[in-house]
Length: 297
Image (tube, rainbow, N blue to C red; front, side, top):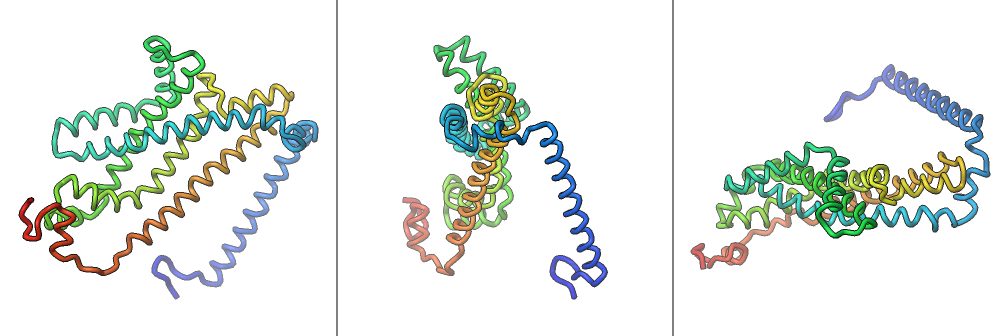
């Protein structure tokens, strides 16, 4: 018996898969036990090291929560700016006009090729020498600037690829009923491409959240990871406990983003299912801004 994608497993294949599964479980358990034993031998599992995070709220209110606020602040600002900027650059790269397409391509390829950390460092130097931004705010501005320049370039490529992946007949059919180029892009191509691009876009948003840690490591921006490092030093030699708490917080944030994206993608796909309705001449005229005869108003 076969399915559309693969041949159905026979008795030998089933036994082999059960054996491989059992071996993997045993190996995973052995590695887990080795990690536990190593931590226990180094006294990293002692209650005194985990007590600040498991028996009170001081560590969270003093270090973790302020760091999380700064992480979310930088990430949110970068997302709000990078998403529309990336969309504009991506659409500009598809323009029929050379004077629009070429500069957009240069900007995208230039900033996409530079590491985001280098962009943050340049941003810090720029704000320090040529602006009146205070020394307290410069790290935040530099982190957001680096994240925006890099991720907007990546998002531009995601938008461009998503639009180019659509069947050519979509734009040809839209132009056949009298839609202008900007209307084809705005009413036909972008709404369809967004659904296909959503997983890649959300993956890039997750990258933005994680890359805020670069600002704490190099620019002394007090984000979540840097705050955990400070808490570790304050409470004394509980590095693993501090970074375990931070890792769990990052997992929760990023899992929430991906879960929301999955829900939104499913909702968009359900809403875009065709009802089978046929548009009349007046319906097309209302969309294109023409009269029912197809002559421009």
